[in-house]
Length: 239
Image (spheres, one colour):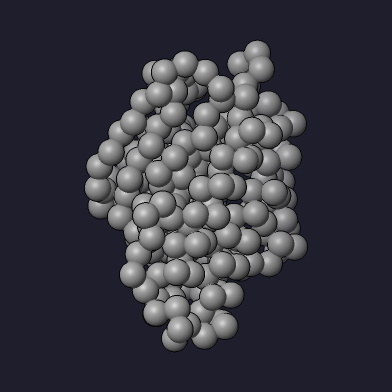
């Protein structure tokens, strides 16, 4: 059961915020009154457009040009957000790339780029954020993944392996930080699995979502004061 609290004045980081689900999430969270910082790597024109549009509407949207594959750059960007906002309430790990081909035709760079962005990137950003959440005994981490991490996909051995890695990362990190003693809230959601504290009944929500639908579900999770009695599993289209 979720108890809604709203997103107003929440300090939120969203990676991969210039396109698709990431952009829809930035826009929706900003509309709900959050102070949103999004990371982007290359799309400076799109980033500037998103920031300008938000500011014109009286919203708080900030862009940070960060390559999530660079751990030091991620750490520095997170510290800038903390310096400006004082905290981080929600992290949405949304950055992802694809380099599709049959296994025998994949170049080394096709494998490295996908694994480094989709797996190493989540390590880099989350590692920089999680200490701040632990010190405040509160926070939410939403990992946007793909059903292909569970079932695989033709021509996507690299991508499917990366998303399977994200699923394992989410479950393992939940064992470290997601058990809420005395009201701490720290839950992790990926595109299929919300790793849960060891408790009660299991709940599942399935559905194929377009970008805005995925953003709305993320807002639903981010707005919650607590998630009780179970684990949410959400199937989404591949990124």
